[in-house]
Image (tube, rainbow, N blue to C red; front, side, top):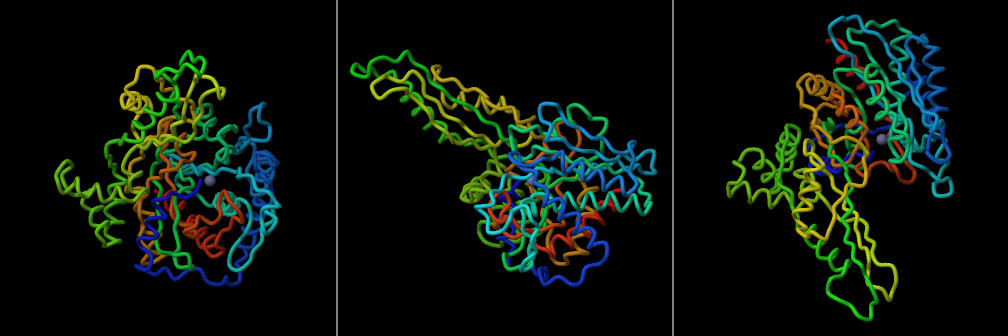
Length: 477
Ligand SMILES: [Zn+2]
């Protein structure tokens, strides 16, 4: 996924406020970093796009690494379904010593968004290090984190390190393509036992630079909105356009769309967004920042609160973080120039606030349209309704500690995503999912999903040390 808008917002807000002192030339690599770099290179150089690639092939390669590190059949589970032979994945388990503490699940998607050689400046499936960046499809989304997870699991096994908690790693396919076989969804629904964990660590968190190499904020990703599509449609017997009547499917749809445009869902805050608005508001220090804080302190419904909400709503990212949103994204209607339309419809793309059932949003659309001739139907079932995981001190405490150690002076902000990750499938089966801080990128999103995707070399190495230590900390109590 692309890192969420509000995290970019935080980066902008905090730019220049605090110095991270990172992003300079890479020193000589340690032996463990040389091995890690080779693994990362192998991951990026194995095409896992839906069109020309294979997650199964990459899972084969990862399995070889894990076996070389000492894992056996008892620890490794491969999974795939016959209809999607190239979209398989892998789960590996490193048993812990504690009989009472529950496991931790590390999650990573192996697949990448399609990249065409002719569009890129360099070969997308060759890892190229240049000017302080690693270039290649998946370099940032999300093969750096995949490599960190695989490398950590391998070293812990080779070194014989005993952790209290069991560590599990699930590498899946299908995150980037809604029509693909989604491994995280499949595991949640079919192998809940295998991935059972107290919580999961996934993509979605991480830091942002000021665009000139200086890290300005780190984010812990906690929860996300649910994307749901609805089709609103008007139907009509139609007829010859030379004898029109006012009852017309296109006009009905147009009237309905005007009502959808006016529909504003009520403001909502949860633990994560409350802390987010307070922290980012304080860092901004401007009128908008003050209004953000007011949303976390004033009585909802008071004049002060309402005025603050109006100001905060002027920022489209903040506006979206505060509520469910629905917007028209596709339109169709009619069948001939000289015929009255028999059908007119639109796709309404909603981003639903965690905890709000999709059916409630459908009913809100129906009520807003208030026209019995119009239907509102949900058209996709990407996954379950998102639930917000708790902003738990057990998760935030060690994350705060690592940020102080690795990135002194850089604030850690919890962030709810307006976009979507595979974490939603885990949350649906009772495994809270978090995107840890540690890695970081540039405010433009580092070309993830786009052209010339890249990762900051120093961010990958420092982020690896950060995440290794963070996971070991979580696994030790
Ligand atoms: Zn991703």
